[in-house]
Every structure is written in C-alpha cells, then in structure tokens.
Image (cartoon, rainbow, N blue to C red):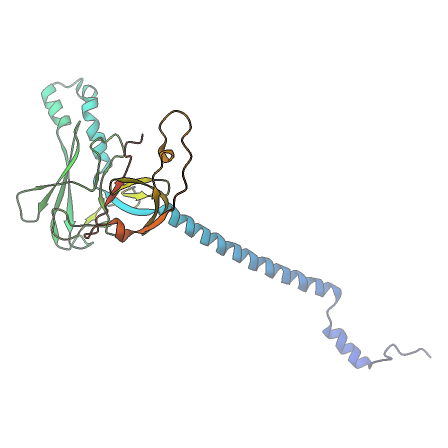
Length: 277
C-alpha cells in the first residue's frame, strides 16, 4: 500500500492552498505589473517636473513687462522714404508730386478708451505721425476738442535705426488692450494694439542694463513684478579693446514694481544703452 502524499495536512486543505498560492509564472507576472505601475508613476512625476520647469522657463522668458509700442511696423518703412527717394521717384513724371507723396507724414490715429472695450467712453485719440527723415511724434486730441497737445512717450529715441523706441508704460493688460498712465489725459486710458503676440511689449530681462535715478543698474533677475539689481560695472557692456576689468562683488537688491514707478504708475527707469556701445 502506497503512503499518502497528504501526510501533514488534509488533502482538502492542500487543494485549497494550491488554489490560493499563485504559480511561479503568475508571481512573475504580478511583479511585472507592479514594476510597470512604478514605471508609470515615475513617468508621471517626470512629466510633472517637466511642466514645472517649463512654467519656470516661461516666467523667466516673460521677464518684467514694462512698455507697449505706440507705432506700427509700416511706420518704419515710411521713415526710410527720404533715403529711398531717388528709387521711389526716379521715373516719376511729376517729380514734385512724387516727392510730396513720399516725404509727407504717415498718420495713424489710435482711439483711447475709458475701459478695455471699444464700446466704452472714448476719451480721445492718440495721433502718431511718421515723417521721413525726422522720426516719430505724437499728439493727443481730447474727445470733442479741435486742438491737440504734444505727447512724449516714456521711452523714445528719435533715431529709429535703433530699437526703435517709442513706447509707453503699461499699467495693466487685458488681451490686446493696454492701460496707460495719465498723460495729457487726466485719468488712465486703454489702447487696443491689435495682436497680442506681435512684439508690442518691450520687456526687461536678466542681463539688461537700465538707468534709474541717473545711475546704471545691471538686471540680475527679472520677475513679473520686480527686478533684482546691482550697480552697473564696466564689464557689463565692454566696448573697449582688451579684456574688461573683473567684476567687483556687490550685493544685489530686489526692487518691487512699486519702487520702480511714480505715484501715477509710470516707470521711472529706462533702457540705459538704447544705441548699444
């Protein structure tokens, strides 16, 4: 008579255990699923870290939103007419008429509103003129008035070959609308610059040099509402022969937007070297 194989436990109990305990292949498959789950979790963490990094890069690229452009690209081409007049009028039948047509001012009128809405109260108009050989100029005409007053933007360089610079401080932005501080107008106004991503905004970035209170400051870091500044050093923009002197160690200071603006919100600094060296 053969000896029973169910010596220490009952055959029924052994059968139950065999049903409960997975085979070697099943165990390996379970481990594989677990490792796959861990891999998916690590991948999710990686995506999350990548998203955070991209968000940080986006903030860094955005920099400090400072001024909005008050001219159109067509103005720049028109300003060059004086340098191209022989090309433009070389074959003209009536020379004086051709000169008058191409050397006169190109005028753009930008409505100014009380709100970021074209149906809101129209405070007046900003009239920008591009005169070949002379550059850009602007005047403000209040609603209902027949007279105009000169307007000088916060950042302006008459030589349009650099920049060009003809920009005004931004108080707020809503889509393509920009709120400007009081100027010849009594209260802040809104102007619609059309496209939001056409380069209308002039920003300050790390590595820029600004002029504040008559002195140069190097931008160590540019945040949306603050600048980290240190005193300018000759090596920050070295235009001489040979190597620049070493940069002396200085303490950088974080300056919030409120300290960079006057009581009306207008920025009290500007780019220091608009023409470069």
